[in-house]
Length: 413
Ligand code: D61
Ligand code: MG
Image (cartoon, rainbow, N blue to C red; front, side):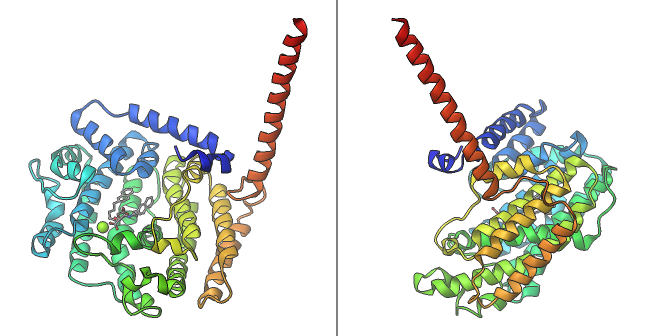
């Protein structure tokens, strides 16, 4: 549950963290009795704690479809991510994956840990997939086919231009956005969202991951993986791996800030997509990952530690996002706060400072114009100070009671 030090520094985290623990316990108890569905849901919890919690809140029928959609694509991604599979073996598997999901017996062993279990026991996922309605089959098959083909294309080719970068992110995450919008529509709960907005939802999440995971991807064994586009990094260094050398810290951080500025373009589309959703559970399912993404970008911006280790949002802050995100007003509030935090980190000497600031100001303008600000909880500073003083008063009251009790006892002797 996060270290004691972090909790003492941020006492506001205590309540959301406890609630999160309870929500996770509750979700685990809800695992269905049929063995193939039990496998799918326990796998979902093991490979993605964060998506599992939000998926769990959807209505049963849609929840089953989204769970299988997730596991099918996670399995496809496990093939893509395993750098020990030779290209001539990997490419045909990626291309044919959308057919394997109809085959009860198909499996291909790869990946490690939980991902290996998912791959070895994939028949459970196929069996559950086959029980979904036809509308869901078509959407899942179509996206799996297009994603597999796109991944195969980028096994053979590097991400050179920013257009390549957007194209790669479209295959691995934008298509998830398109597929989810289709599933929401098929469930009868939402109108069909425009593809370009659904795509942006995925691009914002994927670009955030690619920025955050620089070091992990470059250090991948036996072969490093590179997703930062040459068009951006070549302005700062000669080779992508040079960014991790300490002598290049200044250039590395400028390059990182350039990458974050690129990701910020998608904020506006994401706000638009979210503002059109009607179902509260679908809304939360979509909004929470987006808020975590902008929070992560705010942590990464101008932070050399991205090149030294993993930069993550505090677990307590994640728990706060999970519980404070209910309506569009909460999203405007969170986007506004994290944009503020980003703005305060922009250094005027950064080569992209003006571009970064103007993107952040544009987002803040949308949030302000929504009229949602003022009446809300903030993720930064203000509330924390208020909460801390309440805690101090409580502590004082408690000590007074103990003191009064002790002196009363003493006087009775
Ligand atoms: C609303 C709500 C959730 C959304 C969305 C709209 C639009 C797109 C997405 C989720 C997908 C976002 C993907 C971002 C995280 N990136 C990865 O996991 C990378 O793999 C990409 C290919 C597999 C995608 C599997 C997936 C992920 C989330 C889903 C989903 C399917 C289905 C339903 C709901 C959410 C990344 O993974 C490695 C890592 O980050 O550890 C990679 O290999 O690059
Ligand atoms: Mg991948």
